[in-house]
Length: 214
Length: 214
DNA sequence: AGGCAAGTTTTCACTTGGTGCAATTTACAG
DNA sequence: CTGTAAATTGCACCAAGTGAAAACTTGCCT
Image (cartoon, rainbow over all chains, first blue to last red; front, side, top):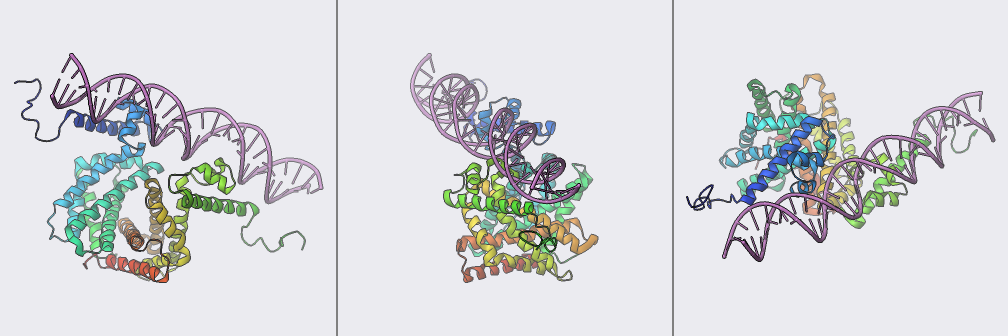
């Protein structure tokens, strides 16, 4: 071993430079601290300074990572939706779109993924400004779905089709989540998650049938 | 005439007290001033103080009417969507929902209604924080559609159905608007508005057919 | 009319969000 | 070890929002 801690001949594979690592760690620390503050003090009752203190950084550094306080919290939602999006991209291109969407949304009912989201949902629910940034996260996800769908369909597909579809799918996902949350609070038991899954399936079913059944 | 300006025996029909009138006027003045500033200086280049000055009121009074700068601009969108919502409520209850929705969305393509909206859309498009408050206005409208639909269907209808439906309809409306705007800028000619109408019809068609056609 | 009560606007002071800049500290290469 | 570039920090600043009390309007009652 020519050098301490790790072999220099080996770790040049990806991009795990100390700098990148630190940045990622700080980012996560901030997000965690923000969530902790939210949990502890409730929406609107803590400041960026509080978060910075808990994360062990300066106020100014916080703003180097997130443009706004809400953005730090929304990063949780971002991660959550990113997960579903990755799932969508994995689906075979010849599969019916709504089926791919359904499969992707199933990822949202995974315990590990759903836990922080459910908590955020519950803590966020009452507050206007927080809810606003949640909205933005879903919107951001919609944009990415549009991109993913465009890639799948090629240029032959109309822009209106793409946007209406992506928006509707996301709306159905939101509807399922909110109904689930209202029934179950942040209950993450297997039965509860099964219910969420069923809501997601039902919502996509409604979408696929043109909301005919009621 | 027992009193100056108007007959007291007559004007007690509604609620046009001087106070209400003044408030309404001020509110409109603020919204107008906000839009004027946006037009004149572009997004992010003017402050609440500027708006207040143009509207002839104090900064503090501005905040008595609107919680945030963006809210003042979003009031334009609110009025726009309110219009469509009123249309929806007028439809007969036995009509298929999607047909009612289609009819309501048609109201958006009316020249008088669409004009301020189109302008706002164009001025707002580039800016992040403004776009955020637009989102909120649509979300608010979604909530009202849910309420209206619940009223129409009575208690027999599932909450999931309601929310998924309302969200999807609004998404399709947004999709049609954004595609139209991207194609036509703020062109308000009859042909252009006809195109918007067609987009709205198409989007609702997609929704009704479960996005089968492409 | 005169005057009281309730509603509105304004002024003032204050906290917090958010940004630019210059100084400092930390990570990496030679 | 030493220079360079990236990251963190402190500081000063402007603008968003909010609370509270003073000043002004409007409506109502005798």
